[in-house]
Image 1 (spheres, helix red, strand yellow):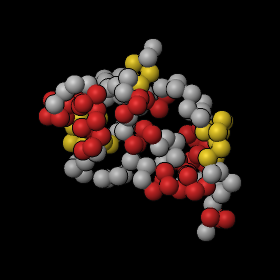
Image 2 (cartoon, one colour):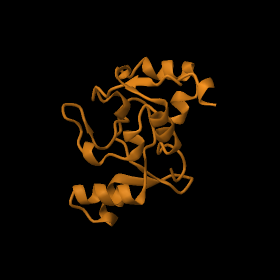
Image 3 (tube, rainbow, N blue to C red):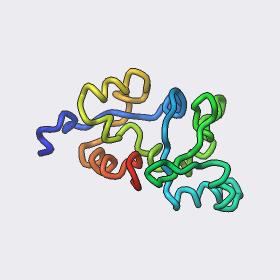
Image 4 (cartoon, rainbow, N blue to C red):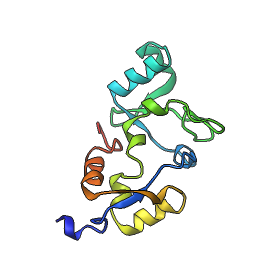
Length: 142
């Protein structure tokens, strides 16, 4: 039941656009076919070209964005931030409301140690958090 969830009163988050979630250790940013198409159009590339230069196939069959050798997202630039922000993938849009982050107060606090926007800013109500978690973009074909 919602009353039993540790975050039933909502959670605060406002993106500070610091880029910490776009860099750091190796990661996976799953992209759907529609997201690939939007990003390709944004960059004035064919879908085939975009897939060739910017994505790779995961063992699950899903597609992921490539990352730079320093593990930054291919679309992150230190002085500009996300260069495709308006068309960023669902996985990026739903941060930090991923199932693994809200699994427990402990996991939320662990992520909040490096994400300045967590626990500050706008209060997201339970129903919004649950909607984001239900399709956070972090899982196979999600």
